[in-house]
Amino acid sequence: MSMSEFERQNSDDDDNVETHARFSLTGDTLFPVDFSAEDVVFALELDEMFSAVQEEVPPFFVQTLLEAEDPQFQEVERGFELKTRAQVFRRLRLKHRLFPKPRLSLRTQSRSLLAFMTSFFVVFLVTVLLTAPSFAAGIQYLWAGSHAGVFLVQKYPAMSTPTPTPATATQPKLIRLMDAQRLLHFPLYFSLSVPARYKLSNIYMYQNNQGWSDGPIIVENYTYALPGEAPRHIAICEFKPLGQVNVMQVVQNGAAQQIQISSGESSYAIYVRGQWAQREGATPAWAYNDRSEFIYEAPGGIVFWVVGDKSDGINENVLSSIVKSIYTLDNSHANTILENLLIQDSNDTPDMFENTVLYVQDPNNLSGSSFLLVGRVSEVQNNHVH
Image (tube, rainbow, N blue to C red; front, top):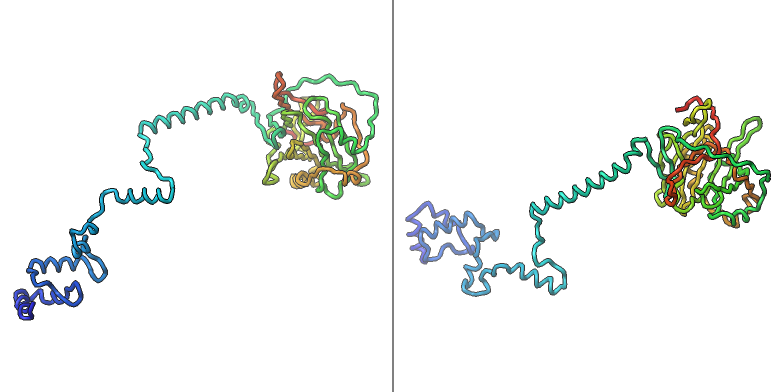
């Protein structure tokens, strides 16, 4: 294309001269010789839409410049991506789903939801039927382990008064600590965190014949006494429930709470405030006095009842420390504890547990659960009885 021809073309349309000078695909040439006016206008429109400098080119621009008939520049076949992915997964030996996951139809989803709701309603109905009598009676449980805890009631349970066993004339006898250990069905435990002012005064072993403990029961008494004042005590009772028997203390509803004492196994204990008390010959009622107690079941199924005097600072924090510091007695500690154990008659009961009422659940007992009284219910002086 000569310069004179270019000038004649520009003279036909003076408005396009500036535009022609701006347009360039290669940077050093303008339009081909065979471009018509319509081709120039179309090229200018493309220049407005795509920027070759910024590599914004029309679709199939490269294929158009190259050999369009060459198979390697033709569009890939349909499904090329899926085939490529399948080949990659096969070579890498990876699992992949050949077909899409089937979607449940609306009818199938409705049937599944209906079956789930029906099952849930049946389970809910059975649960209500089984627990309704307990809820109606204000009954509920707090567990301190697999076989121990408290049985919450609204009032003192009705119990048949057992016929008292005549007291025997035999005197309690003294036996060595290691000999007593042979009679027990569990290792002896002691606490390292009893307040320093309390000293271990005696240890009692009771032969339980009521069918809820596996072998004898151990009670350790710690005493704090000052001249002219009534002594104060901390008692630690330990026993192992018999077989699958659940031994629950019967407590006034609202007088007990579950407390977490650790993060591992046997991490919960029950804190109880008060005790049952006899008042003027009437039915015993719950007395919120200074008695505080922890109920705890250690790994291995050993149950601990720890009782103290709240007026002397033996509160839930102190009881929690006592329980968490319990350790198993071994031969190295035996001589530093006591040389002897005082074996009490089976009819006797430690003073600290005289007013305890038990709810015993024995799955092997065909007559069902039963209430038992540990010792007697004595009169307790207290101005706050509910």
